[in-house]
Amino acid sequence: SQEGQFDPSMPWFGRISPLLSALPPCTVVLDCGCNSGGLGRLLAASGCYVIGVDLAAHFLPLAVKKGYVGAIQADAQALPFRDGSFPVVILSEILEHVPDAERCVAEAARVLMPHGWLLGDVPHPLGKWGWRSIRGHKWHKTVWTERTLRALLGAHLDVRHISYRRGSLLAGYILPQWIHFHAVKP
Image (cartoon, rainbow, N blue to C red; front, side):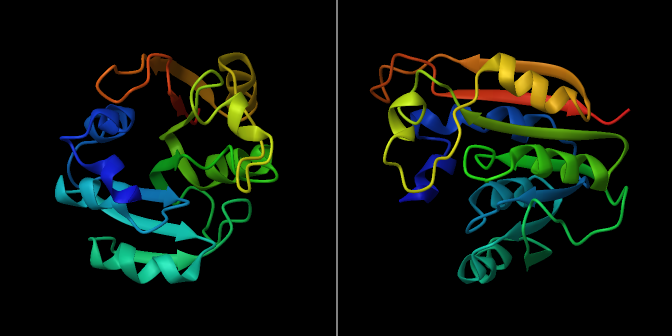
C-alpha cells in the first residue's frame, strides 16, 4: 500500500526523511496533496500541527484519523487560505500531478509567511516514476529536472537546496528516485 512509503523500516522512506528532519516540534504545516495523511502522521507524531488539503474528499477523514488538525477538500492551485497564513508548506509528490505547477507554487508562496519554508519532492527523471512513467500514466503530467524545478521555484521563492538521493539496491532501484527541494519566501 502507499502507506508503506512512510514506514521507516522500508528502503524508500529516505525520500521523505529530509521533510521530517527539517521541522522543529510545534511547527504549523500545510500539506498540499495530503492524500490519506501518511506524511502528516509522521509530522504530527513529531509534534507538528498539520493541516491537509486534497482534491479527493474520501482521503480527508483518514488524514484526520492520522493526526491532522484539519483536512480540507481544496485545489492546491487555488488554496482557500489568507496570504501569509503558514510558516511551512509541503508540496510532496504533487507537482508532477497538477495541470498548472506554476500556479501551485505561486499559491504555496502566497500562503507562506515571510521567511516561511516550502519543502517537497518530485520524482527524479531517471527513476521509476520519471520519464518512463509519463507516457500513458493516468496521473503523471510533468517530469521535473533540477533545472526546470529550480526555475519553477525560483520564480516565486529563494531556492535554498535541491538535491537527490541515489536509489537503493535493497529497494531494487539503483538510479535516483526523488528530487528534494527547500525554498524560502523572502
